[in-house]
Amino acid sequence: MAEAPLLSVSDLHAFYGESHVLHGAALEIREGEIVTLLGRNGAGKTTTLKSIMGMMAKRRGSIRYGGVETIAMASDRIARLGIALCPEERGIFTSLNVEENLLLPPKIAPGGLSLDEIFELFPNLRERLRSPGGKLSGGEQQMLAIGRILRTGARLLMLDEPTEGLAPVIIQQIARTIEKLKAKGFTILLVEQNFRWASALADRFYVMDHGQIVEAFNSAELPANRDKLHAYLGV
Amino acid sequence: MIPLLGITTQALFAQLLVGLINGAFYALLSLGLAVIFGMLNIVNFAHGALYMMGAFFAWFLLNTLHIGYWPALLLAPLGVAIFGMIVERTMLTRLQGLDHIYGLLLTFGLALIIQGLFQNYFGSSGQPYPVPDLLKGGANLGFMYLPNYRAWTIAFSLAVCLLTWFAIEKTRLGAVLRAATENPQLTRAFGVNVPRLITLTYGFGVGLAALAGVLAAPIYQVRPLMGADLIVVVFAVVVIGGMGSIMGSIVTGFALGLIEGLTKVFYPQAANTVVFVVMALVLLVKPAGLFGRKA
Ligand SMILES: Nc1ncnc2c1ncn2[C@@H]1O[C@H](COP(=O)(O)OP(=O)(O)OP(=O)(O)O)[C@@H](O)[C@H]1O
Ligand SMILES: [Mg+2]
Image 1 (cartoon, each protein chain N blue to C red):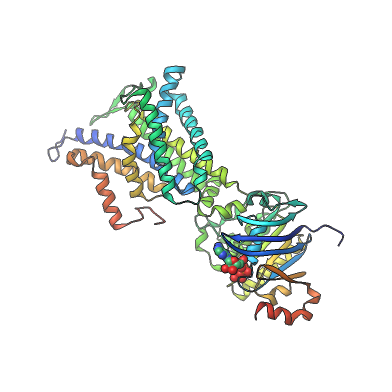
Image 2 (cartoon, rainbow over the protein chains, first blue to last red):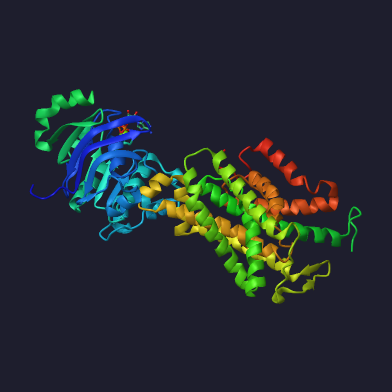
């Protein structure tokens, strides 16, 4: 607990043009943790990840990663500090084949997974190396989107709804992958609607509503908070 | 010599050769335009002026520094690319996110200024540029006489075009370029310095135009308006091939040069308009162009 958090966000505001969508969001992640960000549709989860990644042109407040203030940095510099995003829409490049997609993000630090280790997690990818990115199934796209950010040496992985629209078998495979990544020492910020699924993985939870963090608890406190959570998530 | 429809094979091959030469320039220029459009979303109307600058760069090297054709083949594209990258950094970069019309107006204005400046100093007349010694003379192929320099222009342009295609479609750097063309924001979030890549891409596209200018110098003369005349046809080529398609611009460039040459043989009256007729026909059938991906 005495250790400074790896990522610390405070008083974060973000805008799409004139529309103000984050209103002073604040959260912290310590090294090696899995933290899940919950919240109903439109709460601002994706916007929070994009702000941390430096992809929101208009953002204010403070985001510190490893002690470095990144609120005014361009996203390529933030990526080089060791943060990587698996976006909600997956962001597979259709003009690149699977191998090119996999090798696209430049290595920024030692300690990333080797290609063989990535193929161990996602054996399908090895067989589809030459396929165009646009020809993959939804599950394969998600595996590629996750696999792609494991090579680079980034230590903080942000996964935006990695299970959305996928078959149960693949959702399980992704859960096992996240467990393995935690064992390897990655720090993970997960956005999920599927909170039952996330509750088995995460150390801590934040609940977001209307662009603010409204609740924070750890997995032990989960049962006591179930009712409150249902109210926030509207399930 | 076998006459065919009253046309000698000699005349036919002579025009096909002219067509191929023109096609080589169309291909180099439209390739640069396609690369620039893909990455910057700008229709680079300054392309013809930059082609002319390449030719004048070589002419200056020869007449003031006595640096000949071969070094000029490297130095002129490099010099014009640096000029282009300064233009990109200081002006084009400010147009990001704005409507196409702004890029069009800015580059068109630039072309007028550059051409005006050169006309001011050189008038409209042409400056001769000699064929390099190594490529003087020609070969008699029996059915036609092939000047060495023209053969070299076609072969070298084709090689540069194919090399460019290979670099973009088959290499690691090309993959980064394609990714940044498709989704610049995400590519940047992976740690790629996209603004620098954009500047280099513009420099490269513009360098191709300058290279075409150096190649053209010994064939046509070096004139301030040499690019202005050519660029209209090149834009038609780009429209036919489909904006932003690499192989499309190469194939279309050479093909239209040939079609133009053939028209000169069989129906000379239409030689100057045939490209635009083809353009209109293609747009009727495939509005995105023959190889176009996006509308
Ligand atoms: N590109 C955009 N332009 C304008 N408004 C946007 C844009 N993207 C999101 N918004 C708005 O910002 C708010 C937060 O959106 P965000 O995508 O961060 O929500 P989310 O929590 O990720 O939702 P979901 O669970 O549906 O993915 C919403 O009100 C949304 O309508
Ligand atoms: Mg979202």
